[in-house]
View 1 (cartoon, rainbow, N blue to C red):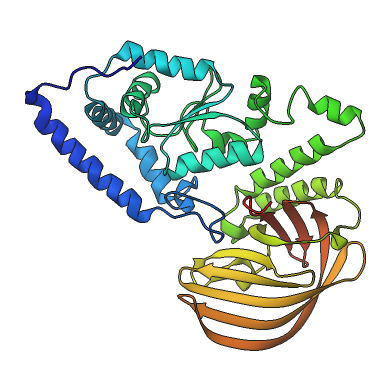
View 2: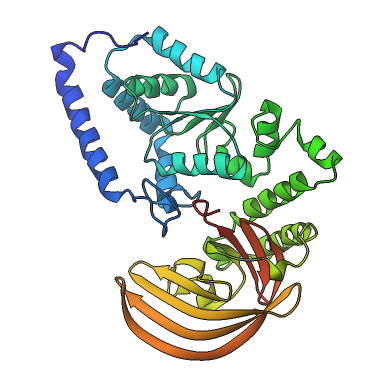
Length: 381
């Protein structure tokens, strides 16, 4: 049943009008700054993904906004936008959603924190969950206000494993947030206890019993991704302790590598998750750190690309299989583009031998001799 009742009396309309004007301006800002899904951003649709990182300025602002008078102000705004609503009906809607799903997320459709939390749960753990988009549903504003009353935070997402377990948002809230729990190595066990993870308990033992090690590999891959996510972007200036932890996780995964990793076919676009290489290989251009990707053109040709704003550096290369674990890479050309137009091209004459430590459909680890960890874009995997 609907939770809507009569509008607020005329006396309140000035306050409501002012708050809604702020909301309208905010929605315009979101629309202007949101990214459309594309091959370049891996299918991301919403505000920039960098905003959802735990150390981003956006996250710091979000953290402050959930404290003391700022939290009270956000709750006031949420309730003002919701107007008068039937708390019992909205509460029952929330309870029903949480009770009928192993994982239930209340979200904003373009929010980078929501998008990152969804990506972790679905891509990394295969979770099937219901998502209630508060900015798209007719009762969404009332749901957000009521969740704020229950949890003390109106920020999204609000992710639940049943009525008694609030995972929280992305980097905070509840038990710590989806991304934070993943970094701490706690998320998998919480999902397994709920029976929410694809391939997780109670089926892992069955996979192992029939001679497969898919569950072990999946767990080690998640562990490597989680520990690598703690490093600065692309691993630039990573400290020695974290570097050792990532190397240990990579070594553990290497034990489960399929035979002949150098001979496995590679296609599509792979994004750099972490590396220890100095200079441009890690995406560092002056004071900036760009996005690094490897694009395979055919069986032997590929490009290493660094994108920093409108600037793109593209290193064209050929690869030759030497044996089961090693390939020889010959660098042929360097191209520089600005705003999509090539402005410089230079022939190169360099080479190196790269050891393939782990290769499967969506994750690769190699030594060049610096360690590189790359992940294949989900849209293509």
